[in-house]
Image (tube, rainbow, N blue to C red; front, side, top):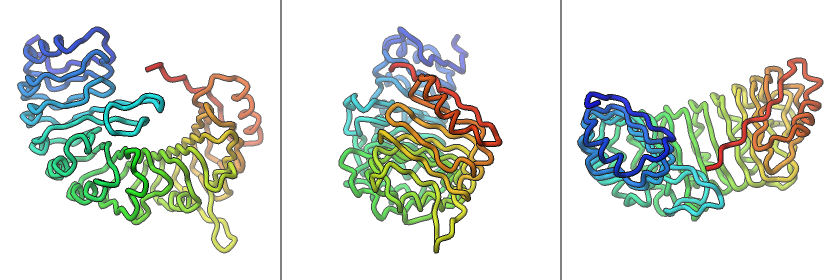
Length: 358
């Protein structure tokens, strides 16, 4: 097996640190190594730097919290995927929020990996703040970047120092708990940005630039104001919108996906085909206008904490499917089917599979 190029151990049980150390010593020709979901691997050996042909390293959803310093020797590395999801009730090991994503600490010297196209999730705070930002701005070929540990002390520096990443197409930012106002006035400098994920927002969106090429947006917020919805409605290329909100402002239990000017309804959310909504209100009215979401095909709803009432479905002429997440209650499915009886497109209602316990 000395000539093995690809080793995929995703979700493998019983693989431990010593096993990995032996593999790395013997499989020096590896180009692809995935340890994703291996819950008994806590550390990457320093001998990882001997895998000089390695192009892809995937250690997502493992206990690995730090990448070894020797990783800077892997000049052919193009993809580093790391970090893990945590539940709201699970305290994170680092300074990241207690939900969403927890990133890994990366060593100084990571900026030498100039062939990298994908890097994340990196915990900026744990990795040394300004020091790691100096490294990140050297990765000028990056197309996809994910970071955690962003807060009011380092947010402006992060966006300024990484503005040189002119090829960036996908960005994920996980904010710390003390992030109130840390994105106020932030300008996102990447003209080519197509996918943006913002986790841990309080109640404001970074509204300074229009993000004209953005086609996918994933937001997790404590509350959402009317101004925020108006901003989303104006994104011209948006195709996929995931919206997770604790509560709405004002607290009337209504989520409006339409906008008006001088009493006339505007064409909004023109290209959105997939919409996912999660809200912790006990009752949520999701309201569509006659000129909004005309291309919507799939509506995903998280029913684990709220009952949804859909209003304005008659205007959704392309709707094909409603996917109910967080429940296996057939009565909820039947309730949604009744709301869809009048639609000529006859969209189906499906119960999504419940997630596996972590």
